[in-house]
Length: 401
Image 1: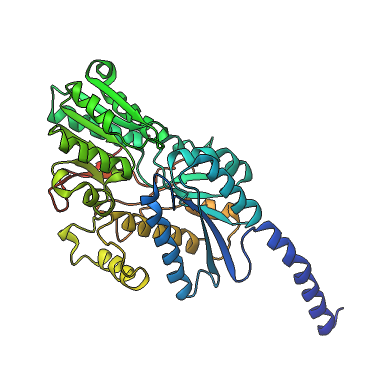
Image 2: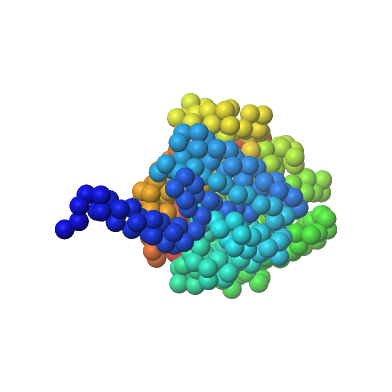
């Protein structure tokens, strides 16, 4: 029978031997730290989105100031990929192979995420709440380690098409779209609703993110005689399109993708007076909407902005977007209860039930499961009135995409 000293020695030896095994099985996690990787467009054609990662960095600083998660500090490593898919591949390889992050969070962009998806899934690294509403991320069998947050672009396209047919039965629809998975998903959603009518009543024009402007595309779409314009574009090109439509004195029913709905990042640069009447959809509380002046959730966000992002443009809805995703990520980490193996992080991300976040619109909740990679499926249509986005109609639940 072992005496107490021998028993203690045996236990200490076992712990010493076991510790490296635990560390090796849990990349990016130590007794004091969790490494989280991110890529964003700090430069390039989509640099308006860089504020997302800047807020996330500040958010995790706040978490660390409050003691971290399960006694561990968050080491948030965010790298610039300039919205360039080859650069995204390079940076994500660095995050996984050199920095040894435990997971990726909110990697930006439809095309950049498409470029890394196979690699990330082969490595079995959680890539959570990506900034890309591409419909294919719903395919849990092909992409078991990837999950978006925002509503599907394809579902958004379906919602817009139904609204257009209701408002303009004689619609001739012009579509300006980014020539990648982002724009093509909006096209697919509109085709889902229009069916055989699509070829008869729709004219399209695309642009590349390397194009200097979309002026010529807007001119050609107006010349086609369209009375509806749907724009599936990122902020830089949305600003250009809004200005050009105004300069041409073209007055179509103007519908714009949610990814460019920020008052601070898009509407102000384009000229608020030029954007009056534009329709989009929303699932977040807009910081310019006086409805939320005394809202507890938005006051929480404003307090955070005052302390951790002083001087930032609080009319930019991208900050609300980033805060919402960060809150969701923190919820997942807390739900792990200290078990930060990649398998458990993914399991917890797929176990969100009626999660309410303070900056989501009323009636909109986050739900996931092993077969449901569509955390947000509800939106509400909004119209810009010259100052803010005004909600109208009921909360709409998207289809199965």
